[in-house]
Every structure is written in C-alpha cells, then in structure tokens.
Length: 115
Image (tube, rainbow, N blue to C red; front, side, top):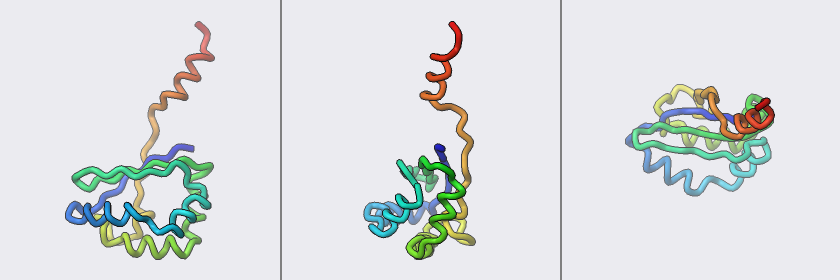
C-alpha cells in the first residue's frame, strides 16, 4: 500500500522543523520501521506545506502500532507546536491523498492488455 498525506508546518517554524528532522531520535526511527512504515519520506515546501509518503501493508494498522509506542507520544508532543493545527497531535492531522496515477501499475496493465 502506497500512502501520501499532507499537513502544514507553521511557516515561521520551518527552519526548526528541518533541524529536528535532520536528526530524528534513533528510537523513533526504529519504532517507525518496526511499525511497518517503509520507504517513508517527508517533503516540505517553503510555505509550510508538508507532504509525506510511505509504503505499508495497512496504513490504519501501521498508525495504530505507532500509537502504542511511548517514543511516538513524546515525539508528537515535541513536534505539535510546529504545526498549523495545534489542537491535535501532528500524526492525527494527516490528510490522506488519493493516488490517481502510478506508472508501474499502468505499465503492468498495458503489458497484459490485448494489442
């Protein structure tokens, strides 16, 4: 399962967000990997637009596994003040985006289609 999501970092705090993600806690990195967050990347625009991408077996299950991790609660508390929506933990505010195109999927379908 490929998942893409968006969120928003406060523009005035972008440098701090970048600094914190340049050296994520090793315990948090291990927790993400153990919870099934594979090929996980974050992309940040100059206006605070944050796009995340990951691959997992089941996104809801991967999120639920992370919710059980103490390190995740600590990380989310540390990061919360950097986001636009400070009423909830950052990982609860993800807006999941619909995948409308995937090159590999379409190439596979085109190969199996009759000529």
